[in-house]
Length: 225
Image (cartoon, rainbow, N blue to C red):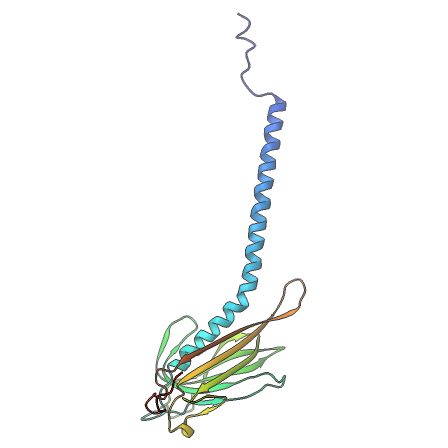
């Protein structure tokens, strides 16, 4: 009769405190694991960002150069590659070309014949790679180029041109019977500051590719790239 009246119907205070302690321990463990994972992700992102920036710039350069028009015919313009150095002594090459389309930074296409200038210029205490696009080349008045920043923190940019026999540091299409190079090599170095130490580090990307409208193998005697 009295046994049912005093039967246990809940947890004691000690059991509840023990359960809460276990919950706190599990929550702390999960928080520590998540914090470590997010910190690792942030570190990986910081390490990859300079490489991704350089890769993106190289891809845009490849698209512009691969779309260059042969410097012949109506509205044809020369293909000029200059071998230059900046005041720091680093390679700072530039290119002037004409193309029927320009890839914008949001991956859209700007149609029509345009003149594109790719150049490295000073930007405060650093350097940047910019693209200057001049549209409407038949306009009776001088058109102001549209300037787009492709990459910041540029240390050096070296561009070489393959003529069928060897790599050249410069290219003037008028000296090559109004032809484009058979292939182009891009060597881009970007620099950035490491968090915590403030040390300046560098990332380097090199890419070579054939030019679709470049000098043909027949014109160069069956050359091999």
